[in-house]
Image 1 (cartoon, rainbow, N blue to C red):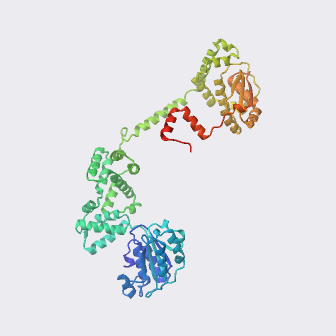
Image 2 (cartoon, rainbow, N blue to C red):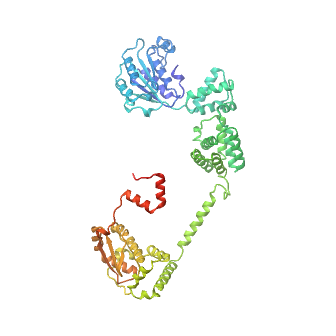
Image 3 (spheres, rainbow, N blue to C red):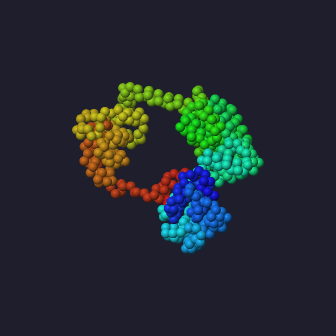
Length: 576
């Protein structure tokens, strides 16, 4: 009936009363906020006050004049309410606009309260814009909504905006106390606190729950009866779980979980409540955050007492585990097992010897062992690596030397043709070690084009490709583009020891030809063969491969891979 009866919105009600006292009223107001916080109630009180003939000095209605009496008796012709959820069409808004043309018979203003205004259709909003921007002087619009983001910016810009806040637990409890005293209902403060928390900031919800509990408890609200009626888990369970976890009593925690489930509570509900409980314990640990606790005085003292025994590491880790369990709970096929594993981990946080618990210690041991292996590998003398590489080279060259055909350079290609080259892992290891440990003086750009190699050791196509890739990797940064192209082109032995490079691009041919001397010198030094000749030519038309389309690639993949062909047939795959 009055602004003073509105709970938890003192800033807004003060602003509205001051506007009434000063007589400076906007033509449109927008009341937005969560459900059940007093938006429509404030709109009705405001509409009543601005039409009161004898308002009080503090901006309240007198409740004695004809306008106030007609409002209290719900027969006022100056106040119109429209539910936009059920009257959201263009015709409804046009009817409302027609009513704005008739001035009030008694009082100063015609007030139009449009509830749930975000439910209006797009056409209705457009029809309402002009009237909302320039209404008659005696018309005031009050729009109420729970979802301001759904309103058009053009609507919002034409209104004075009042954001209603959620009700605090303390404000809700105080209002419920007042209601209980007027209704002659006895209560325990902890019971009212449970109702306020269940309402989640909505006074309308709090009053509905209060009415329900009063009927169940027969006007005697006790903590035990209220949590039984509302199906709320007793906070005592959370205190016990934390105490048992600090003592690493896993078995007792499991029995406690079983007791909660047997009482009909969901295990996920327990995890959510435990997370809220641990959060409150953390807030109670510091005097600065103590006001953030929205609970009864008795529970506040218990939170403070338990906070003195809980290490900060335990609280942080528990919040992480409960949050992870809450996120995984919906997707888990065995929800109880997930909750049990979470509680086991929580009960082992403060355990000193955790070599068995939570699976953390073995992971650290494996990491330490791996680190030691890496350290020992790095400490291996470089001389041993070089020696092993030289030994591998000696063995490989000895096997070549014992073959009669190896005495002449021209025999190498025949050997490669008669028997495919065998991949030698020791040679690959040696070449990689050379790349890692090679001094900076051996970089590509410092290779001398003059060849001063007296010996001519034989080499195979495999040796050529390996050293070619190594040369491309050592090319300077300014030749990065050319290096990337040469990695995709394989040189070949055409007339031993003649090396030929076939490219399909004239630009690449000219770039390679410009540095062909440096390439020849590099390959001669890498392969230990001073007789190497190098040439580059442009590929003929028949040598250039056909560029496959996506569909051709798909068909080729089906032909080459029977498994993929079967899969594509079963799934009826096609190239889009």
